[in-house]
Length: 342
Image 1 (cartoon, rainbow, N blue to C red):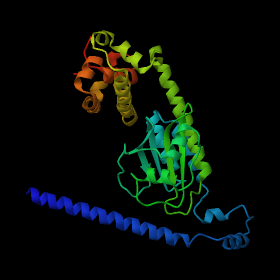
Image 2: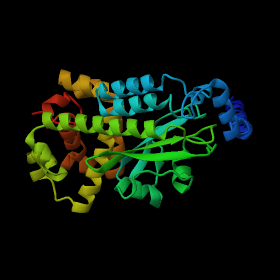
Image 3: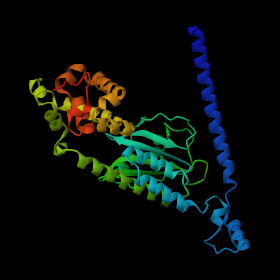
Image 4: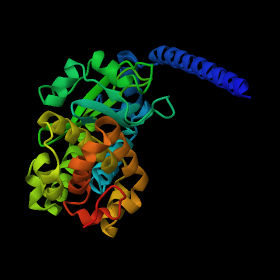
């Protein structure tokens, strides 16, 4: 029976690989054929003349631009402004871009690494969220603020495209989404089967609106947190569990910094990917009750890296949860088996 299952798995993998290769071949052939349908200047001039339109009007609608793009843009802005969380802002941005671009994806930047968050329009049915991309030098420049937009097909585009597709489009745009001058996400759009990205102005406008919404929500969250949130990560952990910290043996500063960094990434993922559950848990004062599976899984990942003893003695992961998800109030976590009460 096991041999039969292994054979089925092998055959399924072979079929999927051949299907993907065939799909990419069809898309490349389709793209090459579509280039032959691009209207040239002579045809456009003749159409304008026959239709009685001045040079700047009318013909664009014949090739799919439509007259509703202004309404699409307005709806996209409304959706961004009404998004209740930063994660919903990113999803609203991708949804709002669909009338203007063939394919789009957002990567969340954490500790200098771009992690795939969500995508639209790529032929891969379920690109794996969280796929990490080590930034090539141009993307590092984009994240640091030295570069405001990347348009060339180059190593940055290839790196971001890798978890999404093996089909490379003719043109792409890569934009940062900044929060207080720091890039917290990267937006990738490309032309898909078209020759070029046709609505760059609308794309950049929606990206800027998304930035403003991210900043607004971040400001709201800071206002809700106590003043202790302004302290550094080490100070926050010490404030949350002072008695345990005093009894614990000293922890190497480099180990602490690395542990706190991983804890912030793990807890930040929960906040980003499960915003409704986080809100529900905060309102009910029982985060563990609504996020049991997610919190246990993230803590297991932390303990696998740094060991149970470190967490039991220093409560780095617990302190990060209390600070980032509970607003500094340990009571809001609720009864978690690995969180001491009282």
